[in-house]
Image (cartoon, rainbow over all chains, first blue to last red; front, side, top):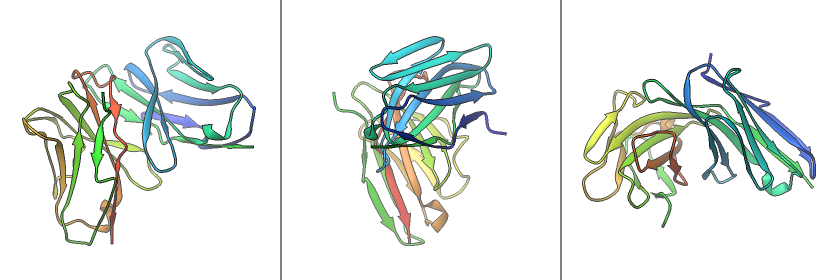
Length: 109
Length: 114
């Protein structure tokens, strides 16, 4: 079993739709990250959070430490949001960093 | 402040050759991490280095792979005698401290072994 599980693996949405990507983890963490990987491969860090909620533009990330769960929301989705979204956690013991396998999002105009 | 730089962005090697991947961390960052992303798989940690020291190499294959981060110059990930299974995207990230939660990723090097 992976330390970090994401769902769904693939997601197709119409432009304008509200999108949710989920991440569950099984280890104690110091922080959770949401990363974005565009076609062509570069990785951009979207959020780093250890509690509560963060918002940046149309992106919102939430985390529930008790339930070991995080969600990434995209409001008013746009084709340029098409990318792979990766959840990663840094552990609070042993200083490890684990990645989910990613959610491939396609937003259709 | 330039971000993390990696070069080359694409590298093609024949089986048996050596591959050298370079990572220049952000200015002021002395901690570098290397990750590998195999086709159809997620990112996996390989090695964590601080200037002139390997801190954690628990994710490095036991043979053919080595990494260094000299006092001057970029961090180098070296793969000797490459095989087809080494074809992957290799990402590095840098951090100003040893806290892994504050990492900035480079654009990656895509290695293809023919």
